[in-house]
Image 1 (cartoon, rainbow, N blue to C red):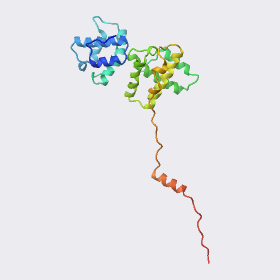
Image 2: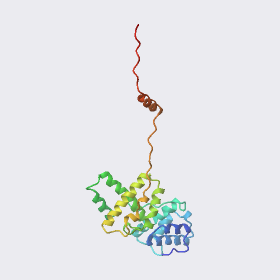
Image 3: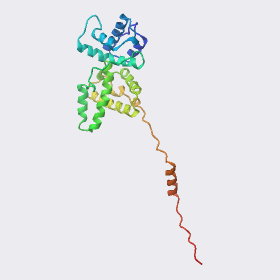
Image 4: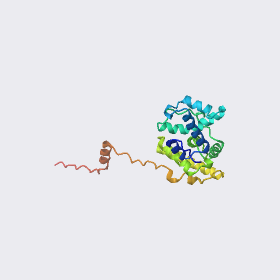
Length: 234
């Protein structure tokens, strides 16, 4: 799908990162809506956003559809907010804890016989990170391409997560993609979607240096002791 010529340059950059057709159409519709009202993004408010969702075109739409549109646009508005183009991020219409789809739940259930509860909770966290990013862009893991998923690696880095956490997330998601592939659900090979070179390098910590007191004690303890020379009484 070719991008409309009247979209702002930053919107075109966002769409080139890999966004599904439905989200592309919504973003284009949002910018047309703003143009008709002669509103800039800097002037765009949560009240305007609610007005748009209620009637993006000529007719009012159903509440359920508004929620879907709001979730699809939330990723774009978060992206705009991070770059200073808008002054708010709309609240998610999802539950506070993202509800994972059935396939992800089946994968988590398959881990029960061989993984500890704490490990399974880590997988839940990792998959929620993945699906929150995918849902905001109208993407599905089963149909992902490398070019669509690659921006997520940068998004994880930009989020400020510790390098160990990012590594765990990618390893967990890679295992999930392998499971999907075994179920014949994947269009692209998992190792092509997340390569080993995508895993962040973990920091290598040097051993802590000895304190001055410890160094003195160590040296004193390592010095060979000599027997005292006793004088003879005359």
